[in-house]
Image (tube, rainbow, N blue to C red):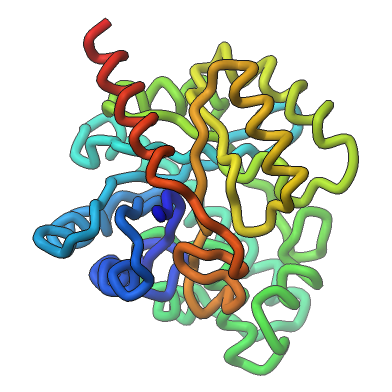
Length: 285
């Protein structure tokens, strides 16, 4: 069993990259990928901790993009975390995040919430700071009971505290992931969808495949059997890779466990083998 979608304290997770290795061993995972939001700063610690651990470690990243009025998350697996253009691009993404955070915090202040940038930075710890950290501060100050309540009331799209991000198109991100030696996977394609999922995914793939998409997350914490079957069918029909992961964040999402998600997730080792074969064939072409 493997997990190819995990976050650490380098972005909005609550476990360090090293601790993730220990947890993977305890869970019996054979391989895991670190895919923090807009940063690879935790990858060096992650790769070092993985040496001799018995757990295969894969460098990755998760990058938000914008396509057809939708925010699309692209996970890059097997990237070179030291590839200069990627490092520079992620730095620019974090600068954009910082500006957005300031605007969100200012808006929350005008709504009567006592919160500062310094408080959010302390809670975040890592260099990639986002809405989950803002939400955590509001929870710690007693304004809400949990992070999800903050998002539902203030930070989701359309809510009073929400401010949109300025995001790149998928083609630019997929191209950069390829240049860095990796594969580009569409993360949680139907997460949050309730109807018309087949039509939605097929419509998005018409733009994402020409943009350089390599695969789909067909296994994910919140997917039911029908959703997984749908995504497997569409992946195979379009010659796309299958991937999967828990999207583990730690204590901020207590019902999502490393490797097993909500308890039933099981991503087979064969997914990793297919991804590696795909990369080898691409490099030989």
